[in-house]
Length: 467
Image (cartoon, rainbow, N blue to C red; front, side):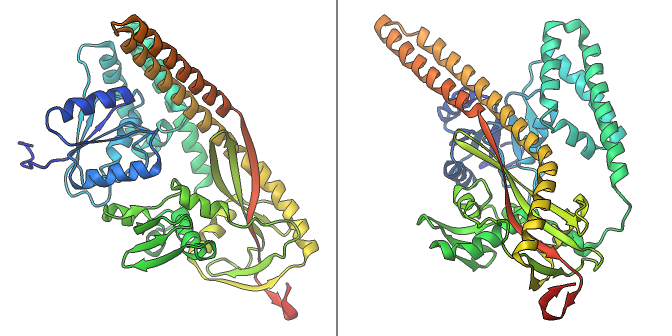
């Protein structure tokens, strides 16, 4: 406060553990600071409420990494990493919660690290070597690799080995850096093969400042709510959304840029169960349904074939993960991945003319061909969903074990034997129930559904037949 000259300075504190979060909250509140907390166990409404109170009167927000996902806190510029994640990219992600569009101050990050420890030495050596990689391959490319699901176990193993064998820290860091360098080189090689040089267009840049999925979500909700008993009315930069369940978002937005520039708005994303309900009720495209024949502005007439959008989902006990996959096959039935993405982009931003429909027999044939292509292309996405699901379950299990151990130690300090034994039995019941729930979540079921399908054609014959 003295350095910043701001008696109302706001501070964002990150910790990896919920018990640590509770300890810090008690410590700061006992010293007169107003505190809000965020963690992965909170639902969307509670998380939104915590963010809103932090933007107003609350001085300190304490968040775990899971709780901080999707936060826009550009009204705060001081972040404290109370404990340090082993993957350096997790630190960058934390800082990114405040270092966003609309940030008016230089962001200050304060890292708590114990000096003269093995962990500190591992971190020093690793950061120095990663700096070399960043200069060699570029910061963005290196960040993409280290931010992948596969990178976390590499860093975890490095720190564990460093703690077990402090004399081999240099060699262990060299091995990790060598592994990352190989991955980066392969990634760069693949991107060079797939990327062609092109001129940047200012109009294209303006179109893609916001992720197209959010634009699509906005269109789906604002256009589809009326049929489900709700409504959406534009009020300035915001939307007044009355949801089908009777609740209301008085000042809502759907894109990241508007949310960054206007923190008082409620940013509606697919994390909101009300938004997911609207999307989940979208009609599915089925084989035999007439195919609209379209012409898209900006798409060459030579591009002809079937474009479809598929929902790939992974359902497990208590959760559902979804991704969307665009698929394009030409009139010979060959799939083209770049064309599929290009058509999707244009469908979201350009004018689309529907000038004919196909018959049911032709629709069935194209549906089967598109489904085959989607099944093949979707294998990678499903594998990613499964990997993310298992990684999240592993993280949840580790947190649960840590929390139950901490509570068990606290119960062990209770002086009265009868009370202590009663608490232990109740804790064991909670532990067994939680572990059983996590075991149930291990089972997952994949699913593939067509959301929409159109025929892209350059010419139309008289009578509405496709040329």
